[in-house]
Length: 120
Length: 111
Image (cartoon, rainbow over all chains, first blue to last red; front, side, top):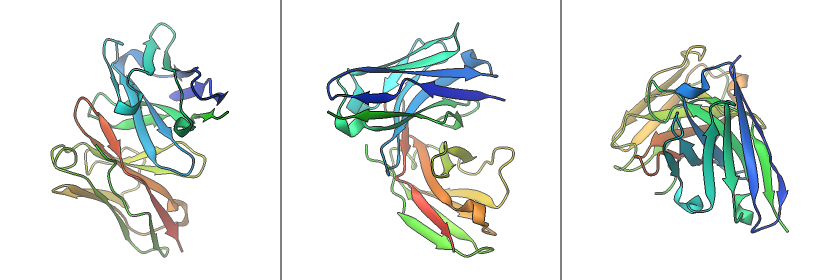
């Protein structure tokens, strides 16, 4: 069935970098905008970044602008999130999700997430 | 922009109905009918339950319904079942720059 699988999480020191990946399968990846959404421990969901279906446009939450870069490789059905200058408050589970082209901001498929811990 | 506002917790007995509120502003919920609700069980990925304020994806029971009035939206779950116990999040489109705002989440306890 349709699936998103994140990887790349781990423990990283404040100020360092990490690159997350999200492998998509069993659906036409190139027809969907893709997103990263994070969840701090015991907290709610926070939308982080989006990339258009063809990778031509990106959008970010203000707190990560200039530090995070979302990208995709449609030949590999893979979404990425390059995270630089990480902060302790960015610790949490990072989910990749797709939005249906039939509406706006409707996250109809999610991965299980990958845990990022920013700590010295 | 701040996150949407939800009650921290709600509860109900099996068979009863509960309503979870979600309050935003004229810049998000008040402007757009792109309001969705997600169910999340502990340690699991969120699941889409309602989209475009009132629409249900296939497979979601009709016990789940959504509505909106002004800057606020609601999710109503009727005929509560034990498996409905989970966290619920609302989400609204907030424009091309911010894209999506989530609520802080509401923990539903089935007594």
